[in-house]
Length: 118
Image (cartoon, rainbow, N blue to C red; front, side):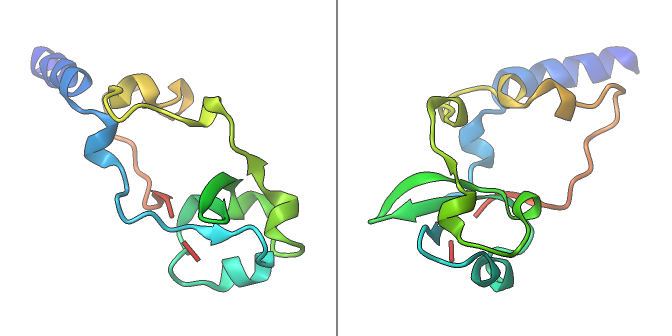
């Protein structure tokens, strides 16, 4: 049984790429919005990270669960930098932070989607 698990995980590590789990219908919010508008937007509920746009360009990331609901998106945006970017061809295992990986053979349970548009 352990051999089957190891074989399965090796196959997933080799074959499952970021492109296979990427959100293609990207949801974003405008840098000039107020946080309460973003938090109230049902299209964005459940997202951990919301790309922030200014003049149709992504300029940063908003983490709604981390910033509360007072103030502006502009003031709470994490500026975009190369540490936030990943190639679509990157294996998911290599891209996933080690602390998010299960220590046992049990799969991760997370009902939230990864990225989001307001």
